[in-house]
Length: 361
Image 1 (cartoon, rainbow, N blue to C red):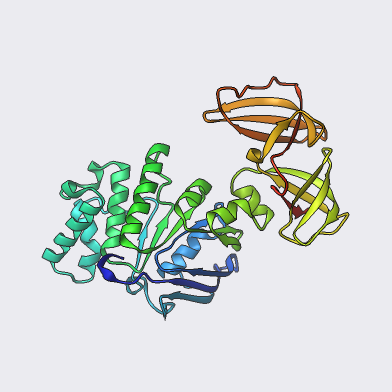
Image 2 (tube, rainbow, N blue to C red):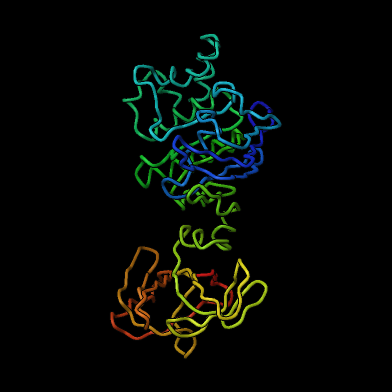
């Protein structure tokens, strides 16, 4: 970490919060974040992501539980004493202050002298590659530049924890990717423990060391991007993170970690089961489009082509199954990848055993 300081860990210990009127925002959230990690809080609107961020920052006092930064319980500390930096979705730059003054604002609030503020602001502006723009006003910068100013301002106070609340939502797609790379580079340089709130699954999977998936105030799963994508523990995680076909069926045989299922659409499939299952259980089988392929024999299950969609590097075929359900199959687009005609009868099968994930219905 810059300056030789050790990155602080963050622990959320059984955090629960109820708003006035009894509305439950988050319930029994436990997270153990290592120093220097980037953690993504991922989930749909209203799942409790921003509430958790505001609790960590000290803007909201939780109803139950503890926030621990390093070795210190910080629940009794106001926001300005928690050494937490935050970048809001709208950046919240002061329009009447120059870029340099915006970056140094937190230092001024802490009584740092003007010369030191200017020097530190210039150092940080150089870090975010805006060293020549310190005299400009926010309205004279692009959205991406304003975001970097907001990040520099958050870093100026030397925070133990950096919080980013939907930081890329206002940017167009290409700039968003550039800024994701830039923020991750700066975070690695500074070595600061960082939490990013996002509803964008690609953003979470590409930027974070670990991802906490939230739904209706509950923590569904906390793990590495590979664990979240390849080994989802709940049906919500499987369908929210990435794309998943859902097929209903009945368990024929079950073991400790998997099962064989008779699909309502026809055919059988073997998959992993995060929770124990028994024969005759009604289940939902999830299978990602990229884990399916067309077959020429009688394996797999039959359907007919509904629509073919060339999507740049991939081709997606929508297939109507005999029970009326539609599923998707995705293939890398190469020179010999052909688009199949609507109405054509096909058979599809998983690329291998165990790629499907099975959940109780």
